[in-house]
Image (tube, rainbow, N blue to C red; front, side, top):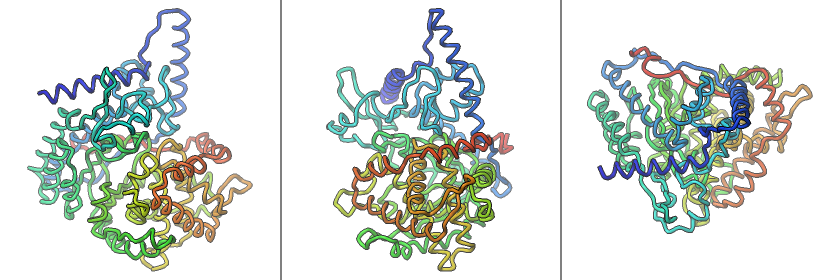
Length: 560
């Protein structure tokens, strides 16, 4: 009871703190102010009217007949647990959800707030779109509002860069930390109970073990045992990724994790086809186009490549741009000892290809090269992006420890950039070895179209920064040209050369652990040129969606 009281008290403090930058519910009394509010309201409605259509609605469904009777009983429990992760992510990203939504009467505006998990447009560089809202805090609600990086760095807090805690400041200015499992005790206990119930019903022994261990992990913040158990699962039909996982929301230090969940149904036939590629990682690592000292690590080969239909997204992975492939766990020690699982979300991927990538290609890819835009190439590029997280270097060669710790808030975007270009490197190598089928022109042209798709997410998040670095680097190397017709044409030989050069550049930045050099690269390369922005604006005028938003849940699956 004491822990719960402390958690509620801190949550209230966080809400009040966050309220300092949220004036969306303020009311005014003068006639002039009232007129101003009407104008602001109309402006908001107009903004939403322009921005809401960038999301294409997609139903998340699958063939449930492939599941056992017991798995069909487990599935709703997993979705309920995922819904709790969604609630927790709201509390991390924007604690005043209820008061914000209560202040908005327009249904479309409420939809847009829900898509963005707050009043900042995630696919427009976090632009505030509600009157009175300032810039998005870099630390979300993980840190006291207004605190500086220097203040935290100079503090004596033992857990100042902890993945599973928040930092609070009392009335005297004293800093302290509180673990997630204390802060969110009530919600996590409920989610844990749901996973325990699901474990009792589950047929698969591996899934049963994982659900029990993950249930314990949620209420202790000790995730290692459950991560290993998750990797050990081989024969399960259902899968669940759940907990505080990614660091993207913490733009202050890239340290603290956000809650999310994916509820997945394995496509066993596709997964079997993908299994062979992970075994080739050590050989690909040896051939990386970089000096030997940067590639001495041996990638784990106990990793898996699996394909899934995703039936529920919650929290971080559902905010703004939607993830279509996942590479986990993030723990570098587990990655080195055992590897990771790369999960390809096939139905979501297919939706993005059909609804977004193909229309973009028809508008921006050279007419003669549009024939090379193919789903198999898109699937492979995305898949090998995730596999490529296992290549390269995890620990610096300069004595600065793991790359993630050395680069802090600069880590995520550079790591995503590494995965982009090394994924393409893998495709190139596997084609040469005859391990992958198709024409290299398909993969390179589809990769180019993929960059044009992803840069529309803006440069406020890691994947957008990574794509802009790749675009600008490849442009500088002549890997593509913009034609007189305003379309992009790939130069295939130069594309391969630029790929190798950028691979070496990124791996060396990571291996050196040189944070200042990475910051310089971001400022000079992770920017959208005016000409490209005008081309992206053309896509908007053509009403080509930027991303998808899901209709999901037990009712969509026909389980009610």
